[in-house]
Length: 609
Image (tube, rainbow, N blue to C red; front, side, top):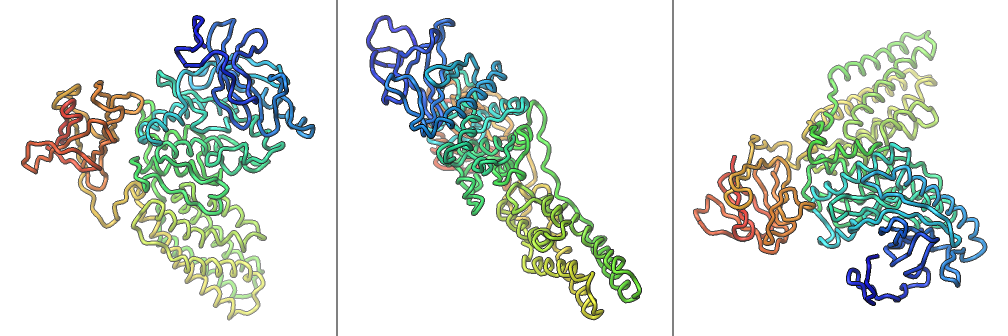
């Protein structure tokens, strides 16, 4: 859409004038829409619509024009313009989707001046379909951005891009709207570095619910399980899942398995186990955003943004992770034993209504539920088999006691052990067999107590229940109390004493940062490209992303990794006695006094404490 000055071949995009489109199902280049717009080449096509580059004659600027064209039920008439259903039976579906497409246009129009959302310019109907005219984004999709960089980027680079998407989504949700189709294809990075969110999926989702197989409509790996259900309840957590999947794709190079498959067998591998360098709290936040069940995810984008951020937001420091609950074990055990003793004593005394005999057991029941729910919440990270609140609520419905009491005791032990596995913690696991036995005895006592006729049998049941509950409560209290606030932030076994904290710096010996001292309190990526590096060196001999530096929490040393740079990274250990430089391959640790250089001297740094 630039002046070609009569030339047959455009010097900008190399399009030869008169070349037809690659398929008859799209509008041919140079098609006019109304009197205002000229259609150019196709920019992209999904299951629901086609987007073209266009030209606005009135405003004299390039635009993007999105045409409503659900490819599974639509075809192009012989005139090359008119859109019609592939058969008469799809007419109602096509019209229904068209109305939803118009609703999507109104949604974008509400946010027309937002810097992070594609700008809305116009909406009109013609050719049996409808068109949304938007501002043209001069840049690349995040998908292409990843492809150009070997399919994955460092965590900090992904954060710089997706934090802008998060801020845009906060405003989308504040306007009571949902995006419903977040993926690398719908995120554009402008030449200036600004990130734009495009292509809202409300109409796409609505048509899928109305007619089609959703496997055609949804993007596998990015859609949460509620989008696969025709009447699945959706909310901000729906976009949060897709955003988490996009984040995961950026830093690992792979897409999570489809959410319906994960509901049966969750095979999601934490990023750090795939070699991704990222803060442990950020990894935990990402895993929570990717929880299969909606109630286990973050419920607001702001909450997710604050949790996954590698540093403070807007100058604030990130709040520390919640401290695991501390339970006073002796007091709790004493309360349980006293309650059992009172219940047994009332039964021995006789001449009491069953309600009074049953009351102490009810006290124990309520006490146990709330204690376990409180402990359970301290190990929630989005991947538990059920929510503690749900388990607690259903336990008060008698018909569900047999099924739902088990998750409160035995289910707690199972999820605690899975929690240790997910975070690679070396703590002792809970005995699931003992917790299962306690669950069975607890439910049996709850049911049999009101109708017990034999004093001997009743007393034995009370004794077994008291012993088993005392065992599992003591083990659960010890296990949860042992989880210190830093347990999930390090792979260091609990018996290993971490080295004392110290402040480490990079001191510039030569180059652009000569004489400057840079504290290593977060991962530093050095390179030429400001969009992918947070320490920029303006030199053609430095690669776009050249080298990565971070602190190893288990040793306190600095780790350095060359990011497949063109001219290499070289290091020198002060303890070696050598004055020569060794080219870096893989990852090494540097201690105070060691130094490294980029591209044979374009930038030289020394590690200092």
